[in-house]
Image 1 (cartoon, helix red, strand yellow):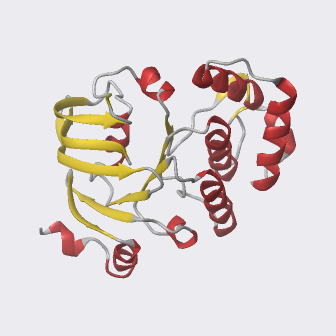
Image 2 (cartoon, rainbow, N blue to C red):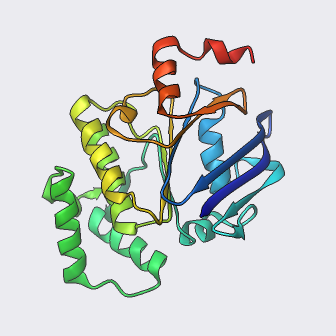
Length: 245
């Protein structure tokens, strides 16, 4: 069943046109990957889905779970079940990881969070992700290493259980062990009722995952779609072949 549909999407910032007619369909149960060189429009695609006001949609539609979300506010889109991780997660002093997750879960589900069940859930996921249990009482991402920040976002993903997870450069700056842990968290999250969109410019994180489709984005356009073999080709030969298409 189709979960996300992007139709002929054109997006710009005040001084530059970035996306030039993106079309993308993601079904439930699938993992999709968008790859491309720096500046190709990968992060813009993610921000456009969440309707970041810094990016202006000139044309096109975004349909999520049968509803047109093209012009909805970002918080409304999030409550409908779209989660996005960031290349550089924000540090929020004074708000603990535990309180942030509990508040976010309450807003997403619209139901009171049962404290003891919530704490047990956090403990289980943190053990699976090999996270320091003391981190839940630290301010969100403050003083965290790069690997800790990325694991923390996967923890958020597991707790909030969105319908669609958009992971933007989740593998950036991580060592091999951290990438394996993040990949494990993604596998823990994935089921037949949700979907994942991974945005990356390399193939490190894909070595531990089985993905359904790989899309090559060059200069604001998807120029090639294939299977995981396409990612291996990019790893070996780079993007040069597709820059001239």
